Image (tube, rainbow, N blue to C red):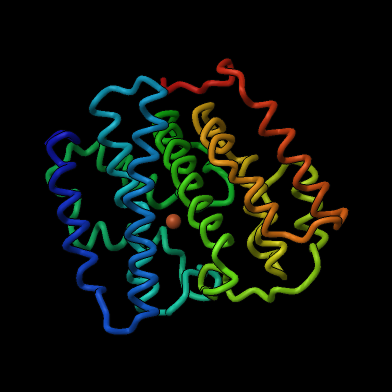
Amino acid sequence: MNPQSLLPRLRQWFEDYITQFSSDDPILQENVDLKAKHTRRVCNAVIDIGASLDLSKEDLCIAEASALLHDIGRFEQYSRYRTFSDYRSEDHAALGVKIIQAKRVLDGLEPAAADILVRVVGYHNRAVLPVGETERCLFFLKLLRDADKVDIWRVVTEYYQNAENNRNQTIELNLPDIEGVSDPVYEALMNGKLAQMADLKTLQDFKLLQIGWIYDVNFPRTFQIVREKKFLEKIRDALPQEIPRITAVYERARAYLNGNSSPCSILMVS
Ligand SMILES: [Fe+2]
């Protein structure tokens, strides 16, 4: 089976799969809904970014399938551990691969495409891109990671705009809302690198880490979306003003974003 034939079946499988996590527990339901909506939005973002790259129909279907499956481990993770923190539970990407294999979700799909999908799901949340992978696998992984970030930025910026009334400890990773930017977070971001989840000590660290995702964006269309949606500005608005470290991290990220408007930085699949 080619990826075009698989996709409609996969969309239906996803909707059927998540119904088993429906719950009377409003917190569980809220978090299941959060990830279901996130998945559908990542599908849309992958199609948007993919369209800017002139992909074949087949490759666009592989990209959308990767988006549909990338967080499939989140539902099991939350229902089992009541957290989205991989550190406090288990790696949701590896869990997703186990589910894809156990449920035989990709049975019948041509092996090369199935292989890419499994790898991309397994790698999608890594701090850095894997070494030694094929260019084709890395391309789909970069596309998924860009689309995933676009929607996580949407989730967190919408959340920060409404958080006054309705805090969600799961989104905040249970981090304390206290003053302070940790040294390793600050140093990584001022060097134009991603901050590490393991270094997070405060909610301010986490918000700055989210600003720093800009250093891991791959495609011009993604930079354009970040500018259009004003994601960095919105996260900055959820942080206190006139704290030198916060201002410095934000200004550096914004300068990087504005320097990435040229289409010559485009990366194409081989
Ligand atoms: Fe994920």
